[in-house]
Picture 1 (cartoon, helix red, strand yellow):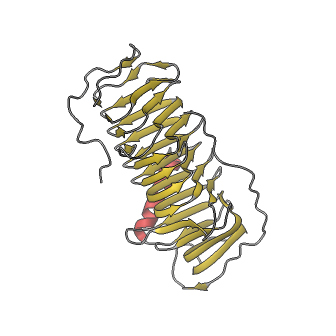
Picture 2 (cartoon, one colour):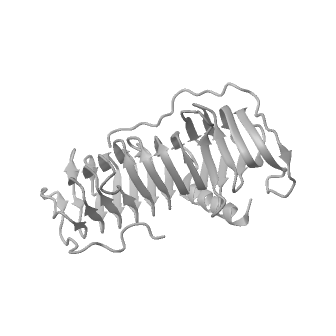
Picture 3 (cartoon, one colour):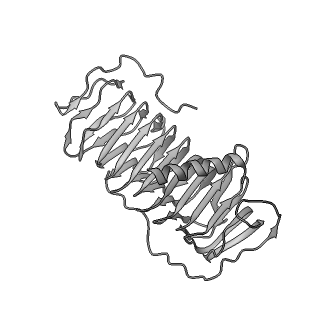
Length: 337
């Protein structure tokens, strides 16, 4: 693995170790049915830090029995699992191609580490309707960096007890969900377009950070919470006048909520909010929404100070603090890159 990408993976793993409308994860029953890992292709020797050769081209199904570093095309032919103690590294410029309806379950470690100009492609096989995606189980770690893709039900399900769940610098279109978090997870420096309802979802026990990211066009709501903790910062949530989003953010219930320095735009509702005490929604631009803030449950001590309201301050009660509204757009809001 290149030094920079291994540094990124080590940083995320070290951090993890230190540390709406309900949309439950699409977990389903996808037990592994094939005992072989089907690895194949020509090795191109070298020191990969894993004690083995680089495998160029591989087919996975069932349990992957040994750690390895893969390049070329990695085919997921049937439901597959990376067990505890096994680490799989996917090299920059590789392609992950999944069969119709399969899932990859990770109890060990999966590092998908593309690079600028050498992204990793993550797509279903030609003619497929799509695949189920990657599941980080308790004890598992999944890091996806610099990847592109389409047609996946849930790119990353971060289940309770997962050690690390990080999605960084991805560009995906036509997906169901991009991340569902029941543990600590991050979505950073990414762009996702054309999503199903609740494409970014936090459930009870989840702790999700979304930063420097663009999320546009949904069949329903974009960012949804059914519990847990959510931080959204320096992001664009919503699209342009010719796209559709029902709710840019649907806060059905949450233990903690911070939304700052973001553009929340062009939704039917900029934010539906309920089931939250002490929310902090500050230094954002609310523009082009049919309704900026719509209560859908009990809200107490909500800090909505220092936002820019293109259509004026919402006419809500004393539980919402709309004081110190910005008189002009906040230039610092939105992705920093």
